[in-house]
Length: 340
Image (cartoon, rainbow, N blue to C red; front, side, top):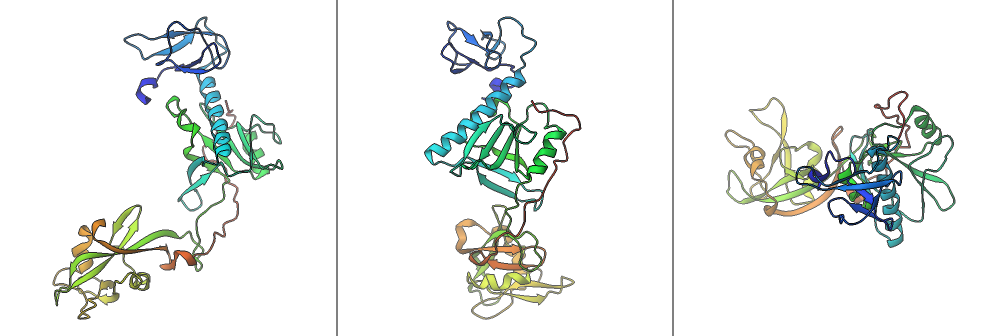
């Protein structure tokens, strides 16, 4: 679908009943009208160009970008309304500039009101979510060609209102009825968990005990620790802080001096003979790390890990975020720019 409408100015129009119609599906015998200006459109569907609509009479005051902006705004507001009425989620994801992690949210957390083009202390958000008592909760800006103007940014700063910026294409319109996907967010609260020692964002990880390795000395099977990072299992990132969490899944680790390394490292220990798993050339963690496979996983457990100070916490014991709402001005806002 993306290739079918890329580069086409008007992929959609209104039929006589006011319903939105795709050019690729539109019957030739019908009469169509522009979604933005309401003037008559003509369907063009040939063998060379992709199907599209065009104004029957040229209208310099109507631009495709305005139509895209209007459709995106309407699909977002209708999608959130529908999700609220059916008790569904309307999900979104944004990368937080505070912790550089991706956070997930749900804009259909009821009860709340959804409005479009509402005046709010000197700014008119494309879509505004408010509480049932009228308190503004989240503003959504649909950006097609121009970023929000400086005055709008200043108003959002005064209001301390989280702002979501959506940059849609024609191919995104259907998706906007069920969620926003990955967006930019300004002034959004950081949802990252915090390390109780250094207060830095702490990662959510999963530790696992893997079968398939044998003691280098007695030959008995031993379990090897794996760490789930970015949806991949990795057994190389062992640290002193991992020793205690490893025991919770049946893996024995200990710090030891290895001749081939300039400093102490973490090695596996055989639970049968107590031998440190240091071979002639390699530490066992390097012998097995390329062979850590999900099918060999015997036991796993969720943890939080602070990479900065090597603090590990069981997931159920982690502290709540202590990050307050921080004012963030988007770095790419251009002076004098205006929103469509």
